[in-house]
Length: 128
Length: 177
Image (spheres, chains in turn red, orange):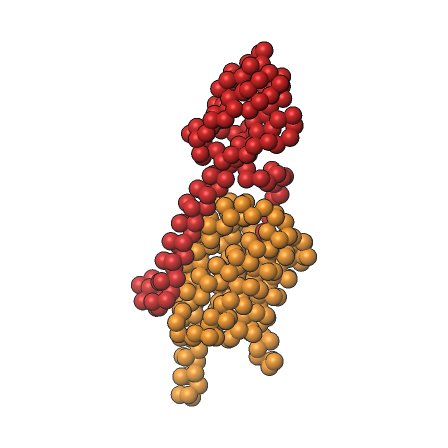
């Protein structure tokens, strides 16, 4: 074993350190960049009306059939703070960080999803 | 190609195939992680007998192994073939262009790295087509590849040294006789 270590060149060691460092750095940076890629999409009458990144706090008013609904984004979560629909189900649903809030009477849908990509079916691959 | 070279390629291919088959029997913690033991033989072939022998051994190993396991021309074969050829080409290029800069360990690392790069690229274009999925998994695969690359590099290093010692002894015996 000692002989093997003695037998490595400087470039070998440098390459090893670089690869380990780069891949570990990659694990952290890529994961972070991906989690920030989530967007909040607000659909009115079935059509996407607004898109906001979920990591920026924001409060907006969206007008539906029963007047304005107030949608708030905070701490990477989103909720409908105020709505004037009869049953208030959307307000009762509270904070979500993924999935969707649907307000049927107002025809407003708030969706938290990836950065514009359709969630396609995952394909498993086998390497051999 | 001389007859002796043919024997050598045949023998090395047989070793590589045996290791390849043995490796597929081993349970791995994560399905797409392989040790790449056959790369040891490729590396030994490259250092001791040159690039052509190494490439030939790799091609024979990949094609025959896929025929034995019934994945010939399937998706697994394409990944295996691309990775094997690309990593051997990369190792050969580095070995020929800079003979003394990298030892067997460095060459093994380069081989593992390019094997994974080739497979990830192929997987992206042929099967998955979701760049985020590939990007998330790439660093993990590269880290694991580096670790197995170190292990293979150490084994190759010991093997190469012992084989060189044996040939030297043989030559000395011949000279003494």
